[in-house]
Image 1 (spheres, rainbow, N blue to C red):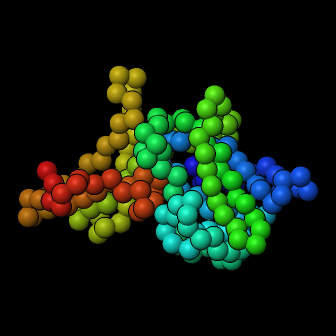
Image 2 (cartoon, rainbow, N blue to C red):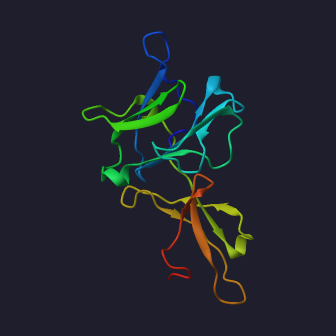
Image 3 (cartoon, rainbow, N blue to C red):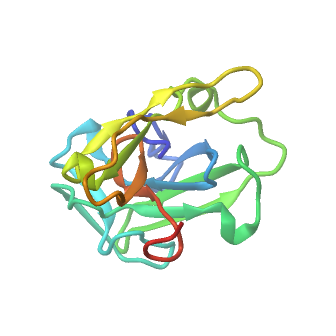
Length: 180
């Protein structure tokens, strides 16, 4: 997710009519989750009433953030590539709302380009279902390659899935249970 660090939004002065906005570019998954914070205060968060909110989801807050309650900007719906730029707007007023729109011809904001590279981990039966970091084994001939070594248990089989950035909401797993 893009918002692993605070980003200052534009607007909110007398000319903006309570509209605050920020440009973002989609990462490699083309999905970004986000919520807002007033003055970076975790006890004054603005978030959707349900997890993975859309532009039609009711806005709640400013209050303590609820775990997992973020808006989901899903570029897969628009069939756009990674690095596509969107403007996210918070419209504050009697009935607050959140919206986003694709902005053609814009370069990704500099703050997006400075984000650290993603990290990957594995969660498995041999880790007691705790996240174990994976080793970055990338090379020029094999970019974005991650590895982990483990010993098979007595059953001769292990169950596992991957997570990105230590976030269980960003799990990578097969479509079918016990996929192989």
